[in-house]
Amino acid sequence: MRLYILFSFLLLAGNSFHFTVKFGPLCSGNSSNRKRGCDTKYGCGNYGASRGGGKRKHEGLDIVCADGATVYAPFDVKLNGKAAPYKKNNAINDGINLSGEGLCFKLFYVKPDSYSGTLTKGQKIGTLLPMQNVYPGITSHVHVQMCDKSDPTKYF
Image 1 (cartoon, one colour):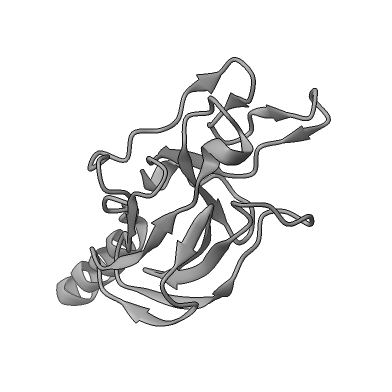
Image 2 (cartoon, helix red, strand yellow; image 1 turned 180 degrees about the horizontal axis):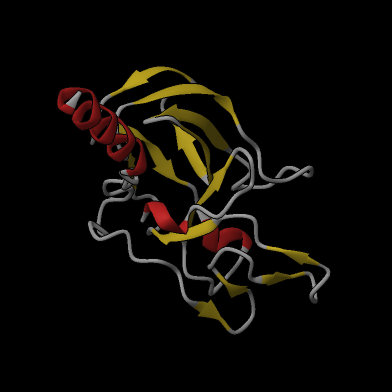
């Protein structure tokens, strides 16, 4: 009987511990995944920040990354095809759908070396596109967006 009670307790306790996945470094030159703050002209990089004069909300989190910098796999990932952030084409309209560690997410403003396959943590995904060509003066960044558009902040 005692063994049954102990086993039941351990089973319940085990189910109440959830370990949150943490993203490894996304970008060369930003090993701490520093988040983009606010730019006078372009707004803020946090999830839920106002966009379009308050008509819509920012659906991702911006991680500082220099134009042309290398973008890395934050953990072992599967590359699941192209993810374009805009309907109209421009110099930064590229990105990639990824999955790994039980998460589905997108990285925008990245030119991936490939749109399919798998990578291990720290391998090169691609290169940050030239944000300054489209948004002069913005803090260049990788936009991280969960597939279900939930807040990715807890993973950083």
